[in-house]
Every structure is written in structure tokens, then in C-alpha cells.
Amino acid sequence: MEISMQDGTKTFADKEKRAFEEEIDLMADEMTLEDYEKVPVEDFGAALLRGMGWDEDEEPETKKAKNKHLSSAMRPNLLGLGATPPPSELFFDKRKGFTGVEPKTKRG
Image (cartoon, rainbow, N blue to C red; front, top):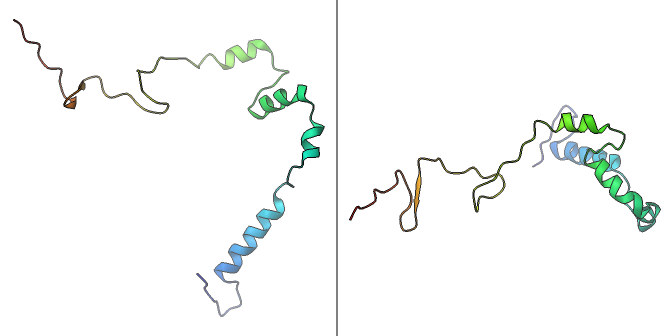
């Protein structure tokens, strides 16, 4: 899509191209094998953890206080990450799927 302006302003395509080139110029250079070899194996794990927010100088008491709000709860069987369980009032029948109520049991 190209839009020409009579007042001398750039076209939409020119603006997009300029924005793309500016973003490319701001990007870091590509890593080489020599860059990877400069990092000792012993420090690689710590560097990885620092990238995820780990701070080796942080006091253990602070870590415990920070993680108090976290709780672990069991997920229902076969429920994937990010999925919400069905409402408790639904009943699953193998033949009919989810139904509104649990079927009455026959008394014999």
C-alpha cells in the first residue's frame, strides 16, 4: 500500500521501511561461537537463572517472604496448563458428554 502526499511528506511504505531500518540498527550484533566460548561452563547456569530474575545476593528470608503468596494446588486429571476445570454442577457421562445433573441411581 503506497500513499503519495502532495505536501512532500513520506509515503506510508517509506515510513515503514525507515522504522524497520531503525529497529535493525538498534538490535544487538549476532552471537558468534567465540562469544559462547568466553562464558565458562560453571557460570552458564547462574547467567541463565539471572536472566529469569534470580539474584544470588538476595537474602533467604527475603526469598521466603516473596514466595509466600505462591501456593500449589493439584489440577484435575487430564486438565492442561491454563485450562479451567468445568463447573462442579456439570456431570460427565461417557456416552452423553457433559450433562447438567448427575443421573439418579436405580434402586433395585
